Amino acid sequence: MRLLVRSWNLYHGRTHPQSGTLHLEQMVRLVTADAPDVVALQEVPMWAVRSLDDWSGMAASWAQAMPSAAGPFARFVTGLDPERFRSSVSGQANALLVNPHLDAGRHRRIVLNPEVSRVDVFRGAQRRVCQALELEADGGRILLANLHASNEPGGEQARKEIDRATAFLSGPDPCILCGDFNLRRHPVAGFSEPIDGIDQILARGLTVDHGPAAWPEERRRVNGAVLSDHTPVEAVIASTS
Image (cartoon, rainbow, N blue to C red; front, side, top):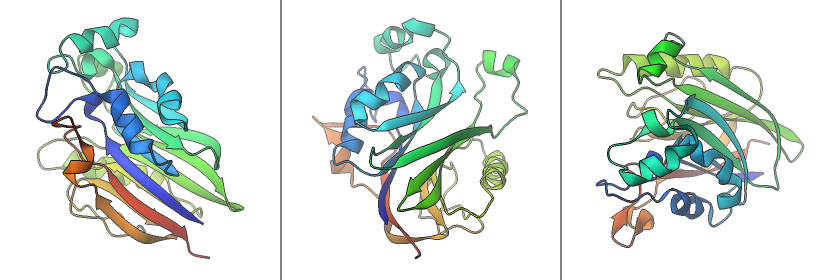
């Protein structure tokens, strides 16, 4: 068994440098165009989560990190001024996309910063989450996980959140951990070595055949615009048997 795995922080569909246009659907279609096995996404606005299946041709499982303040009007409001109206208006989620040839089972999530209260969220604070999805492939089970850690000076909060995610994912099953760690080259005990960046694909109990490697910028440049302030990362992961 070999799996092509990708991870991308979509930046709510914005470009870098920011412009007045959202490209979210285009970004999802781009990262899934060649039918990878699994894709982990971060910073997905809540208005888009129910469209991910159609845009990607894959099965989407998502975990809300922040509710939308604008409800059904969020897409319209953020479209008016993407530079000004961000997650506080559109909400935010993590998502896992799975190729239909794989069987997806139980989906779970954990809040990585439980000290953030509902009142804090109402005031604009973000909850950080890790989601985990069980996959059946070639008669074996793999745990696929996706996290987005806090971006704060010093990185201590992100370290705590990654430790909570690691405890959440503990167990005998092989695991693929993707996401935006907001820490450069941060190692996770029991997993493969990180690359020099904050966006990672790590494996436990599996072999990394290729990568992880970041896409060249040209691959996410469309009509002169660079999609997202993050670049997709991809790896080929294989079973050890």
